[in-house]
Each structure stands twice: as C-alpha cells, then as structure tokens.
Length: 396
Image (cartoon, rainbow, N blue to C red; front, side, top):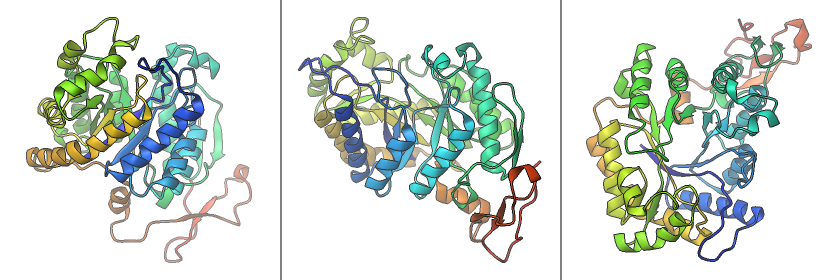
C-alpha cells in the first residue's frame, strides 16, 4: 500500500501571525515539503491544479519535474489534473515528458474541477463538465496507446494521423487515477479502463464516498479487470498530528477556526469526530485511518493534506516528519496484517512494464527516418530493437 501527502496549493493567511505568504514563498515551501516526504520514506507526493487565486499550481508538470530532480524515490502525482479544461493532446505530451524526466516515478489523477469561472477561461462550459471529462480522457488514452491517432469528437477539432511526442516511457503509459467527489460516470470510466478510482474523502461525513467506491468496484469486476476486491482504490484525507491529543487540538484549532470553510460553521472536535479529518496523536491518526480500511476494504493509496489553511512551512514539515516516522511505519504493518488474499498492489511503472513485457526488454520507440509527414499515412515510429519488426502497424 502507498502512503503520501497531497497539496491543493492554497495561499492562505496565517491566523496566528496575520501574514500571507507570497506565491514565491509558497512554491518554495511546497518543494521543501515534497523533498521531506521523500526523505522520511513516504511513497507519494501529489499537487493539485488551479488557475485562479488564492492558489499557485497552474502548471503541475513543471512543479513535479523540478521536484523529480530533487528527490530519489517518491512517486509524483496530481490531485487533480483538469481533464476538462486542458487539451488532451497537450496533457499527453506534457505528462509523457514528466514520465521520462522522473524515470517513471509518476502517475496522474484526473478530475473535472468545480470552479465555475475556470471553464470559460479555457473556452469551455461547466455544464459540459462530465461529457468533457469522458471524451477528453478517451482521447488521452488513445494518444498514449496508439502511435498514430485519428479522432473525431464533440469538443475539439479532429485529428488525422497524429502522433503525440514523446511516446510514453518504455511504451507504457502512466497509470491513471480518476478523482471524483460525486460523479458515477467518472467511476464508470475508471472501471471501464481498469484505471484507479480516488475518492477525495474530505469535506464530507465519514464514509460518504463508500457508495461510489462500491459502484466502481462492481463495474471494475463487470469489465473483467479482476474481482471487486482487486479494484484499485485511493482515499484522501487531512491530518494534524502532535505528540498527544491535547497538543494536536490546541495547535490546529486556530487554523481550523480561522478558515472560512470550516471555522464559522463547525466545531473542531465535532468535525474531527464526524468526518475523515484526523487530529490527534500518532496513534489516534493510525486508529482513524484503520477505520477507513474497515469501511472501504483493501485499498491501495492513502494521501493526507498537511499544508493547507495557512499552516507555516515549519509546521507542515513537522507533520510530514511525524507521518513518515511514527504513523506510516505502523500503518504499513497494520494494513498488511489485515490485507485480504489476492488484493491488488498499488501500480507502479515497474509493475506495468513487467505486466506488459514479462522478462523481455521494453520497446523503446524511435522516430522512423523514412516516415515522411503525417499526411501520408506513413508509419511514424520503429522499434530500436532489431529483433522485432522495424515498423509498427497503422492504428485503427
């Protein structure tokens, strides 16, 4: 099972100091947090995508590529990438490039986005959000699995003989999670392709997302990817940890009560009791997370948000340290002891390469010098391994 952290990239006023970090300070802090997550042995760091204040992460691939150069082993992901307002052609190219630069230490989570003004900024209508998500991912999937693509859809101009570059590393596309708050169509699409399904598991009552996760599991089995129990599920969450429960509540209370989303409507103790928010000692965070396992069954990825709501970077780094040294090592053992026989592992690039090629060397696509141009219908790629066919069949 994979454990890690995610950031929504908010730039929020610190209620204790009444100061708000600059964009430059917040970007630098996020890189430091990701580096610390790698150092303490967490498995995943994920960043959200936003195109409006008070957030900074408008270019996740740029940020994650920089982090990849500063880390050794951690998987880099998104939380989420906007499949609705981004051109799937650019996404295919940019995330394949990130895959190469990180040597396969990446995957991505796709989502619709729920900020109404963002859609028209990119020439789209939020009323088409679900349809855009479905169509754009269908195209992204095709671009990563076929060297030459012909495409016609509703929301973008057609493609004829198009090849996205670079091709995925080892000719194995990044693993995709579909993130959703309340949309069964997205869970259906994740199940259809055998992709992962990630429930954000925040801003809602305990186990609110269980019906959608169960629906995804059923459809995963329906499409023949494995049993319901082998479906690939991820859960989000938010945590604040201290050496003991009293210190945790005292330390987190100013940030919770100073946040307009929470503090004016909820009490901290009540909110922590009735939602997935985890506040307390390391053991209390462990116990709360194990209730997720009890309700949702075996799942493959657990991410916590630990840097939002105006928390200073020093506090966020302490949270990462406590997760990595006192919470996650125990959870690894506890989750393993509860693991059902045959439950799936969280996919990695290495696993996907092994599944596709077995013990054979991976295909390394290379542009064919005899290709001509895309309008001729010529095959644009060849294999670098002389033992296999020199050219690839046309797609379609």
